[in-house]
Image (cartoon, rainbow, N blue to C red):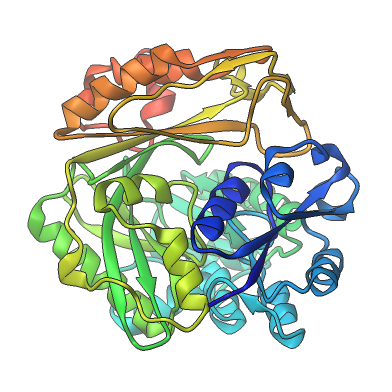
Length: 449
């Protein structure tokens, strides 16, 4: 068993990991920037180490500072959470070279799947359905335009090292292709330091459905069901639910089988997610693999009654999975809403500031993951998420009603939030009917749904 784990993250995911470790008798070390000196995770951990000033590049992305902190406090493992260094192959390799267990997949797998173009080619070779497109990647807009003509418009232009909706643009035809390619490429360079792009046919009005997989070092791979993540703003998820209201049993089984096939194709270990786009005819296509725990892992935990973070720690310690595929049964329906400090009517502009007062919802089948508290400052340096509300009901409608109640009960004073916006979605007929696709938010804002 691991003895001491350093959590290379902040916010609710750092708190989540610390709680899992403490329940397992594992000592914890928090790291923090000067802006997070009074963050909740620093108080909950057994030890806390400052790793630099507020900007993420000088603290939570500072690999040398984090490795030094781990060695200095005698941590035998590092859990990266999500974001920051969680999918950084170089950091995972640095852990290995310094005798520290990285709680996640190997650096070679992260590197292989982190490049979206390479991941796409790997899935094609493994027989996993992919969106029609090119096997090669591009740096030059002219060559890319020639390739786009052979695929057919509309074309999705994506950063090979992308994520979080950055470095992604849709070209509707030859006339706008070069402009959209250049915009996406500049964004990719600024965000990831890599201007390599790839192309695929844009799927019209798709659903975004992902399969949670988990695998150990003994050859066991389990698919823990799917999550529907179609409710998004600016290509970033707002609401997730499990199971998807759009899938039938046959499609669900095929998708889980393909997710397992994808994980085995790269020798994957730990928790990860295979993300698919699905068209209106339930044809689905591999989009990417997230080689880390997801923000929305909580909703899967709620409907499977399994602790994903605990399994990640056990796997990192060399243990086998504590459950098998036939033991995964979905219990009812789960929904998760991300509560952000933002202003929806202003393009979801972040709303940093101090939370002067906060009341969290509760009750049977309600879970809130947060690191915020009265007097906590939502910093302009990091993601604006305040909390995740997760509910479980016997049916989807019961879960929606339970979420409405939770959203009504939650109070945040001092910053603007998307609470009212989330509540209005729960009352929307299209959402309640399970018919929302990835274009839902844009249509919702225009009053078209």
